[in-house]
Image (cartoon, helix red, strand yellow):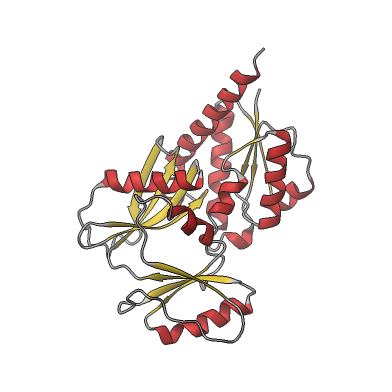
Length: 282
């Protein structure tokens, strides 16, 4: 029987989603058991000291840089299948993600500029129009707290945000133009196996008409650019129906669609494991 180890996300990287992140991984492991796979889960701290080389597949939700580098080294030396691989999780760090997206013209994102956070000199304003405000985001991991991604109505508000980032030893930030429209969250597996979306706030969404094929294709392109198999993200549907990709991340919580997502993710993982079994047959 093939085996799969799931590693939970660090609690500090699951702001307000600690239970949801753990529950989707547990649900996937339970489903894999039905698909004739031996499974186990570990906390990141348990995985730090465990011998992980005997597992056929590792599913890491963890996001800390040292842990991901250790898993990447294991993947190279032992040829362990990982979903998503550590290199892809690192590619979700915001600066790396923006760089990856820039190489695919089909991926449309809001006007974005990056800045390093150093010294006492104030930052220069972005070249893009900020009449409707802008978003200031830490340049590495996605949200770890409520003030890692901050909306600024005016440029005068940005310096205080920069100082907060600097005080938390964040070395870079992203300036992104605010885009009006409906905010949607999407989830995907594959890409190409399964895709769904929902409005971030159904009560206030304007339900602007859009082409779901374009949304699904852009999400798939973003996931492919980062080499993600299990992913989620955010997009904006503008009043004209134009789509902008905001973020993609590895192993979201899938909270609203957990039951269906667990089936689809486990199917994807089992497909990968069956391919591994076929290669190992004499």
